[in-house]
Every structure is written in structure tokens, then in C-alpha cells.
Length: 502
Image (tube, rainbow, N blue to C red; front, side, top):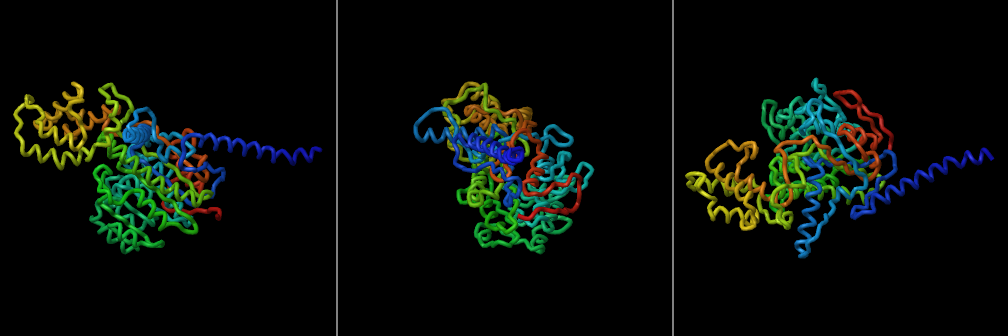
């Protein structure tokens, strides 16, 4: 009798555990869901791993995009009611929160945060995958490569910018763009894509020429990119990847680059692909809500490509989405004059305020005469603002009109005294963005970064590892565990790894 009871206990425990897991999965998908991604209970063995980093993205940026999607949809249907349209990332079943501080600052920068996400180690702000005493750190991309996986690093900003660089380079300063670029030829990356390569030419030579000599195929257009084949090492530089708000409709997107990387990197040992939505951060620095929602949506479209791949390989694919830090101190609340249609009205904006400033306002200023603060905003300029931003001047509150008039005077008079309010940016375009934000129910506390926690969303093989309270150094270590690898506990210049076979 004792033998029978003992033999049944493991079976009973397993049944209870599986039942518990089934309940968890069911609860996770009881809300609106189009992804059908499950938090697999398979412990390890993730053959295909996606890490998505929304630079500067925290919950306010995500939620604002979902509110915007709902507002535009209901406006088009001539319906007005509260609600949100879920993004792909928030429909992933496992959710967590992540701290982001660096080794020497509570509020991190992208270099130190990228290093933590790439290596599992804290470093000082500004440093790229080295310890504070400048010893190189092994990255999760290097670890994956050493295990026979193909590696992709994708961004919509320069490929040697802080976040992407942290996965393949090692430098004491993120500002060493030439030195970072010159590490590309000998790096672990098989597919590297972004909008530009800063500092390509320098004392060590030309980084693009060196990459070609190392076997990279340098492409600058969709046609050249589509001509690439599995097995090619690719360096893709596509300058048309500007802000989505300013971008031509046929420009290469983050989603297209993700899809291309999947096709080129699929191999018997699988791949590791890091995709950064870098312009979310830039839009946050600008405090520009329309750019935020456009960039988050473009980032989410890239995540959708990974979800499509997951459906073909559900037992072997892991998708993790997180951020390096929040930018802008964005909040979904304002004490100002909010418009009932303010969130949907963001869709009327045709250019970023930066493009408005360079294309319209600066040339306009050069042709105009301004005498004193008694000169109000001319009707002609108001018309141009309405055309670009969809701003209805008659609906503005007194405080909003005063803000615009004051910013106009500062811009026309060249007065820099208002720098804290405008972050040393062009006052009048920034004030327009401030008014649009206020009307959409959005406020900002800084033009820089903030120390708030950032979200983590995950689905697929070993996704359960990414729920709950995390630090950014936990992310690569748990990615390694999902791939049956182990991140080195100490810094090292080379990678030696023993891994289980798939």
C-alpha cells in the first residue's frame, strides 16, 4: 500500500501543478487578445529569442498609444466613449516591472541601461558594455553567437547609438562613435540595421569599408535588402527611417527590418534578435505626444512580426518586450484645458515640431519683422500652424493662448530666458506641442529621462521567467536561462560556453 501511494504522489503533484499553470494561462488570456501567445511552461530550450527594447518607453507611453488608437477609431465611427485599443505587446500574457538605475545614477542613460540589458551587469552612465573600471562584459548576443545562433541587432536610430552598441561593442564612452563603428566588423552580429552610422570615418579607417572587408554586405535600399539571402552578413543603413510622423509612406519600417531579419537569420540553431524602438526616446525628449504614439505603434508593429513567427514555432520561440528607461516624465493627467476630442485630434498633426521648425517656422522668421511683445502671432502663421497641427485657435483657453504668445515672442526676440520651460529648444514649436499635449490630457515633467520603473511583457518559451518585480540586469540572465545558457557572473573579454543540445 505504501508503495502504491508513493508512486502516485509525483503524479498527483504534477497534475496539481499543471492545473495551476492552466488556470494562470487562462486568466492571462481572458482579456482582449489577438496574439494567442502562451507563457510556455517549457523550462529552457528557447531556440528563437526576440528582445524588444522601447527606448524611453514606460507605461504612460504605452497607455497613451492605446487610448489614441481607441479615440481615433471611435472618432471615425462617430462614437464617443472611454476605452483603449490594446497593443500587441500588452496582449502578451506575462507582465512584469523593471528597475533601471545605473551603477552611479538613480536615473540612467541608454548606455548604462543598454549594458544592463545586454550583459546582466550595472555600469556607470555613458559606458558601453564595460564595467565601471573598463573591463569588457560578455553580452547576451555574444553568448548566443557562441552557441551557434545567428544574431540580429535592429534599430531605427544610428546602429552605433548607445542601445544597439551595447549588444556588440565595448567602449568606455558612448560618445566614441568611431571606435564603436570600428568594432562592427569583428562583432557577433550577422544582421545589423538602422538609420545611419555616425563616425564611420576616423583615425582607425572607414567602418563601412572595414565591414565589407569582413564579409558584410552593405545595403542602403529596400531593393538591395531584398536581394540578400540567408547566410549573408548584412549591414543595412536606410536614412529614410526618420520619425514616423515625418516619414514617407513607402520608407523602410522597423517591422519590415524585423521580418527581413527573421527570414535571413532562421537557422538550425535558431537566432537571437534585438529590436530597438529608438525614436520613442527621441519623441519623449521632445515632449511630443503625436510622435510618441506614432513611434510606439511602429515599435508594436515590429513585435507583431515576432508574434507571427511565434505562431509557426510556438514551442521554441520567446518574445520579451521591455525598455531601458522612461523619457519625458510623461503623465496621463493635466491641470490645463483638456479637449474632449484632444487625443483623437493628435491624428491631424502632419509634421513633428522639429520638421515644422526647420521647414516652416525658421524660414518664416527670417522674412518677418518683429518689434516687441506687443506684436501678436500673425494670422498667416496661425494658418500654417493649423494646417500642420490641426490646431483650432478658436477652441483654445486663455492660458493656452498666453503660452503660445509668450513662446512666439521668445522665438522672435531670441530670448533664451525661457530655456527651462522649453529645454533650450525652439520656444514656439515646443509651446504648440505643449498645448496639443494639454488638450490630449498629457503632461510632462522633464525633457530628459526619469527613474520610474518600466514594463516587461513576455510570451512563449520560458516566458514565465519575466513576470513580477525585476531589475534590468535580470533580463539577459533569464534570456540565457531560457536558451539553456548562463551569463558569466564576472566580466570577461571572451565567451566560453557549454550548452545543452536542442
